[in-house]
Amino acid sequence: MKIKRFGVAAIALAAAGALTLSGCATGGGGSSTKGSSSAIITVNGTEPQNPLVPAITNEVGGGKILDSIFAGLVYYDALGAPVNDVAESITTDDAKNYTIKIKGDQKFTNGEKVTAKSFVDAWNYTSQAEGQTFAGSYFFSSIAGYEDAAAAKLTGLKVVDDTTFTVELSQSESDFPLRLGYSAFFPLPEAAFKDIAAFGENPIGNGPYMFASDKAWAHNEKIELVANPDYNGDRKAQNGGVTFVLYSSEDASYADLLSGNLDILDSIPASSLGSYQADLGDRAVNQPAAIFQSFTIPARLPHFGGEEGRLRRAALSMAINRDEITKVIFNETRTPAHDFTSPVIDGYSDSLAGSEVLKYNPDEAKKLWAKADAISPWTGTFQIGYNADSSHQAWVDAVTNGFKNVLGIDASGAPVPTFAEFRTSVTDRAIQTAFRTGWQADYPALYNFLGPLYGTGAGSNDGDYSNPEFDALLKKGLAETDLKTANKVFQDAQVILLKDLPAIPLWYATVNGGYGEAVSNVQFGWNSVPLYYEVTKSE
Image 1 (cartoon, rainbow, N blue to C red):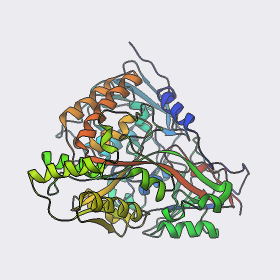
Image 2 (cartoon, rainbow, N blue to C red):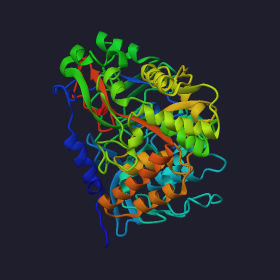
Image 3 (spheres, rainbow, N blue to C red):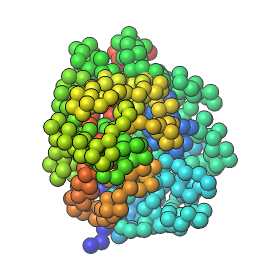
């Protein structure tokens, strides 16, 4: 069967349809009023882990900034459907060879033109930079030449002219265009390659916003963006800019929202989940989002390698009362997990073989722990690391108390002051405990919850999990040109994960947020991030 696609919208129809049916419980809109085009909106954020370079950012704090200051080939609308941004068209006859044409009137904020070379150079740099490993490089593993570590460039990328380039994949992958809105695929100006570290402190983008000045990033305090007057895509800012306030606690950000010192908050602290909808009324937001929460136990930790580790992971999973925690701590704003993805993604299943390991079963948990002890008796304390600048302590304490009560072991949380410090300890493999993990989807597909997190060598594979059978199913699923067939393969891959438990699934999140009285046209997207460019504000 030959495939011909003009643009990319058709590729995500099934995924977008799933999101449409989910709807939202409350909030997410506000009155449609015209505000001041110069008004600055204030929103919550966290200190980015790394310099703001698309190649090395794979966490939400930095991702929200990059998505605001860059324009990729496509962007995702509120429902997760891809819409052409810099791309004029993305076409293929065989789902292996793609021709990408870009709009010819685009430029970076330093005046440099955005060309086909801007994309090809950035992709080559991310995937093949000598002596460097970037978190985003895994996203280019499908392109021909990626496996050649000695090559300076991907053989599958060719610049045809200023507005055209071609991409050859190593195999047919029909969802390739759907990924192209993710930040790893953003273009870079030539100025970036002269000093990438300096660029990350004061990035030059091509999106709806830009840095307010060369001192716009006050670390651990705020990041100031202003509208980019030269951006001419569909995400044209309806306000004068966005200031991300980098809070050290969610309680502080919620207090600022209530007092009128913050315009938009996309994460309500656990302590206020039971009251925020009454506090905010129709300005409260509670809607499904493509977010999965878990914690990871690296196999390198004592007692967690081989068969002993498999038994202990299953025992720990069955010792967690997810129903009780989501009701008592999260006021039913979370849903117990049945798999490794999200209910809002097409292909989700709540009845995978082996999913019983995610159900509370204290008797079976004790039996499995005893079997592991027969291999090697348990010693030490079990801890879950987390960042203390967000509301994680309550659920970590509840989970570890469950381990104490069910398994009779010493267990506790291990807080790290900030998200940036926490993530650095994880990515550097310096952390010596289990640690909280999760995923906010980059694009609406099952694969995005699986490949980047559990594929061998993947950039977000924090536990260094590797299973050749799982990898083979990922590759097989990507090669399918029929979405339903591909999703069945990805479900089969999850059956392996349910046996190995490279991460222990906890629950699916909704986006719980709110906004102040001064702003209107507030809409939260499919991945829980507000569409900042649509927001209007009175002065």
